[in-house]
Length: 483
Image 1 (cartoon, helix red, strand yellow):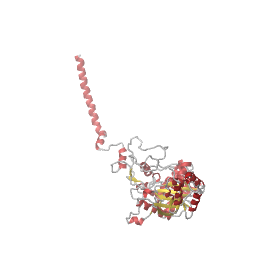
Image 2: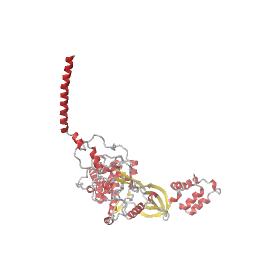
Image 3: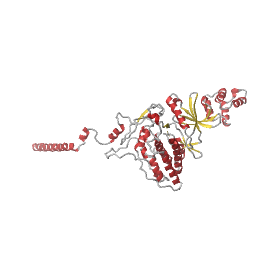
Image 4: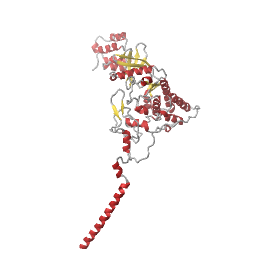
C-alpha cells in the first residue's frame, strides 16, 4: 500500500534529507487538490533532480525513514554488509562530506560483549593513519543504534574483481599483496593483528591504491592485561573461531586469540593464490576438511601459473608454511621479499634469493600400512564450484593422519557450536585415522589374521578330507560288490 502525501512530506521533514525551506517550496508548488497528487511520481521527480536517492525513496515508501538519519549523518545508499553490521554511504550534514557509515546489527545490541567489541574496533582503527588502511572518523550511538563513521573509498574489493574479470596478472597481484602487506606492517607495529585478511577485505580504488577494510577482528596486544589473568577485554576466548575458513592460518584454527602477525602473513599468501588462480588454495566440501587441509595438505605450487617466477613461488611457499616459525618472522620481512619480487617482474636487477628453510610440507609421512582403496568422504574434483564460506554442520570426517584441531567452532556472535567430527571418542581424528587402516584392532582379530593360527587348522582340514575319502572309497567298493 502506497504512503500518503502527508506521510511522504513528514518523512522528508523529520529525516532532514531536504532543508525545511526546500520542503516548503515543494509543498507550495503542489496543486490545491492534494488528493490527486501521485506521491510515487513526485518521488521519481525528486530522484531525477538528485534531491532524493532511489534508496531513500524505497525506504520512505516502506515506512522505515527513521533509519535514514543517524545523528548528524543522512544515509544515501547501502554499500554492503559484514559479519557484525551493515555499511551505508552517508553525508555529514555539518560539512557535506561523504562517508561510509557502519551500523551494528540490531541482533548484536542485546550483547554487551558485541557492543564492547564494536567500540574496540573503533578505538583500534582510529589509532591507525596509513594510506593502505581505512581511516575511522567517529563512533557513537543514536536512538539505540551504534555506528562507526569511516572514510568512503570509491572502488571495488578484489574478490568481486576476480569473480567478474578473472585472475589478475602476476604484476597486478603482487602489487595488491605488497600494498596490503605495507598496511599490515604498520598495523603490526602498533600491536594490532587483523586476523581476517581475505580478498573481500582488500579494496582497490580508482587510483590503484589498495585499502584494507574491516578491522573488526583485530585485537590490541594487551600483554599486561593477559599476564594479569584479566580476560574481560578479550574479544575471542579459546575454542572460539574468528576469521574466514578459506584464508585462516593453521594456528588460528586452534585459537583465534593466540595468534600474532605471522597469521596475517599466511592469510595474505592465501589471498595471493586467489588473485592468481581465481580460487582459494584449498577446496573442500565442508568446513572441517577445509581447516584440516590448511593444517596438513601440501602447499600449492604457483609455478603452474604463467608469469610466476621462482622467487615469487618461493616467497609464496614461505608465506603459506604450516608452522608459523617457518614463515617470515615479521610482516616487514614479507614486505622486503615481495618488493624484490615486484622489482624482478619489472626487469630491475635484484640480489639472488637467499636460501631459506623450506616451508613445512603437509605433514610428516607415516609408516606405510595397507589402506583400503576407497576415496575419502568429502573429496571433490578440482573443477567443483567454490564452496560457500560459512560455518555449517558437517558429517563425520575420515582422515589418515592425526591433526591438532579444535573440537568445535563458533561463529562470531553465535552460541551455536559446530562439531568437526560426530564421535564419542576422546581423540576423534587419531581414532578415525586408525580405523581407516586395514589392520586388526583387537586381540581376537589379530589371532584370526595370524598365519601361524591357520597352518594347523589347514593341516587338520586336509587330514579330515583324506580320512573321509578313504572311508568313502571302501563304502563305494562294498556297494559295487553287492550289486
